Length: 505
Image 1 (cartoon, rainbow, N blue to C red):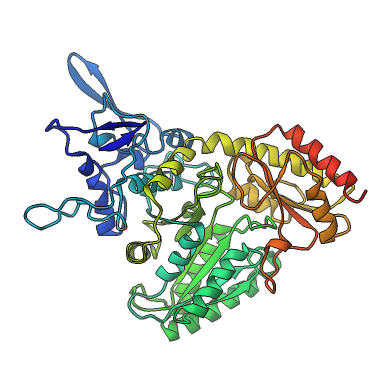
Image 2: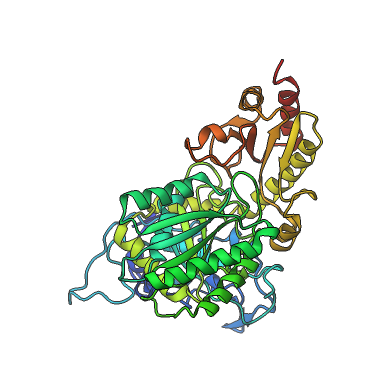
């Protein structure tokens, strides 16, 4: 039985397979470890078939243009499984499959499309992964592929029990297969402190094969320096049988720096060609371009369409969007230079190490996805208004938000982030630059909540320096980070104004 909107239902009509096989075909992707099954048209949004009854028969028509990203999001998890149910009587909430194990055929032989054990794959998790895959490559004005039939097929998507689990799994999967030589990560300066902590932990408690260094990826004056560094480490990695991961976080947490994904992806491919990196997955010297796009979900930025090999999301944040799900996801391009072997490795890591989300988390994340478009558009608009207000406040020394004309990477943000949406996150520094004043401002707020995390419906503020590990600072002492929620922006402005004006009184 399956829970569908609270109703337990069993299908016995021979026309439909038993409920636990209803999504069995989607498991084929796990076993092939490359791309989504083409039998799910909603996962490939560029052509959607519709039927109408005329003269007692079905007449199928094709859309003249792609289904929009907002339409895909509104039906996340609902349309994807229509091939396995009666299209005239399908549930409007996706099924929740809680079973951990599936019956074995009498022959003892599992077919390619069969489910076996929930750690390896689960129908509800598959619905979520398919939905994420569809929106990562849906047409976008910024992708340069709008109304182009030669669009990217859906990526391979693996979901995990947290965003950091997704990060660690992708780093592990980037190592040359079977060699155990490890991976060297070039980590963008100013990125989320948890990513650096994960890399240090992998180095300390793993084989020691995972190493990293921090480099600037946003300063145009340092681009030649970055190119020299990348070429240097790629040559060394090829000799050592290791791979390189160019880890981009854009916008960065918490300084809101924006990195040009397309430019760095092209740089990585050029350097591989110069070094003579070979495509054999067992050999080193390959540069995997990975993007943490948690602050810029697919309706804002689609890194795979800009040349990245993989994109990571902390689903906990905007995609789920209600501060009640702990989850992560990694999407690997099906058409990039390293997509095939990287997807195969990642599937192996996901199934073997088992850091997977529960079916209920996946179901909750699908529910959150269906309102992502409307939530994030309001959050972006409110964040822009708040940034404009803070930029002119006498008690604020600096405001960090990509939508501000004076932001150092504003031009990159305009080109890379869709519909003039610059995200729902911003940060600012108090006038005297001290932690004491910043904490005093946060303490006086009444509408905005003091809490970590981001992307939910409520507006949150956090003094980041005091939350970061000692010895590894990312944030200035006087910086406060804001995750903008769905409240009336005028209430937020008044709350901040009162707190800033009276912080030291």
